[in-house]
Length: 582
Image (cartoon, rainbow, N blue to C red):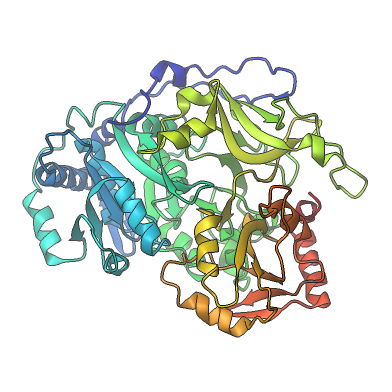
């Protein structure tokens, strides 16, 4: 077992203290004492439940059937676990689409005490190999959709094909046992999940999530369901949104979990109607993609009670509610479990909200002092950005943080005197609502996936004529970030068509990492210590005398003055033009 001890008493101390000077007051919720300390306990409590647990395509599983499938995977994991005199943890990598097998493996790991490493299929080449190697995966379960990603790896652990006859036979041989949990499965400190994120160095970090932490979150989550509810999930299961906002609360409440292999904007409406969904979860641009579909009269003919997600624009939330008749709730949280902001009544459009009860969040400047509130001009622009913007810091959150697997130095960088420094910039208004203002670390968040700039810069540096590359985040017109790159090309010769073709042939370029905007310059701006000044590039956006190209499919086209004005209007239409003035 790895990471901090699961502190049950800490998690049960839910009462928020009085706000300190410069501190945003936490939201009020009713304290809840969880009935079960582990995911295994929650599963075993459902072992005789014949209510619907899982809906996938044309199939249905009851909770009784799901727990028995979990018991079979638990027995399989225990049988396949290699003998290790050093006592290293039993990590099972999962590289699958959203399929029932993914759910059965997580549930089986919960019963057996194994750890599921959710492998991100958008990563490629050396980065993918580093994810697998750095998390000590002793075995990987994959399938036809993603199994080919492992073919290029120089070395890899044992691989099982979940779509093959051999795997089906292995599972069948382990069916029939009575559902039960091992002592490790019943220990709240056992690490159940490793959830990948990315930091400023380019090396991936695997966030540790114990079975106790996930069980607690699942039972006290403000998202509550009843036995007749159906939660529809098309977000990737390796992502915390699917696990914490949908699967966990479903398990805690005995509701149904309906899922799709991969998100499909055109498939959203047919799915929620076919499954009778009462809830759905989303991240990033999901709503934007759904709303891009032609409006249909039957959109409002659904059972949706509410949706929950992150990073959708205020305009998209309002338009979705109009078309589907479904209210939406938003929050901001960290995979590390150290900070949680929620929207309360009266939260301004575009703001992240206020801290959940039990969390104390401050906006802290580089000098360590709490930043003053933001002041706004008549046009809504931030007048005192220099003093109001600081890093979001969660006070006293060290006890919640279970660490990064095999990367203690990364954890130490986040912790100072018991506080957790998020790496995200923000400011608070005079009413106490927190607003997002960018990233402190050199990393980007695109479509709710985090990745570091350095590996992308190395790839762009391979293009002929480029002597240096700077990759950084600029706001997306709808949500999150988009990738912008400035290429130093002293000769001034740049072929945008050749560049697009080059990017399409790079095997280690992740699917989210291709630049949306590319500036070409004779020399990159530098700081006094001769380092590239990315803040200067971010402030410049797509303006200035250098040519800027915009991605259009697999091609890059030169941005005209008319296109730049149209782009600015897109930000204003989504209520995100204030991000261009920070």
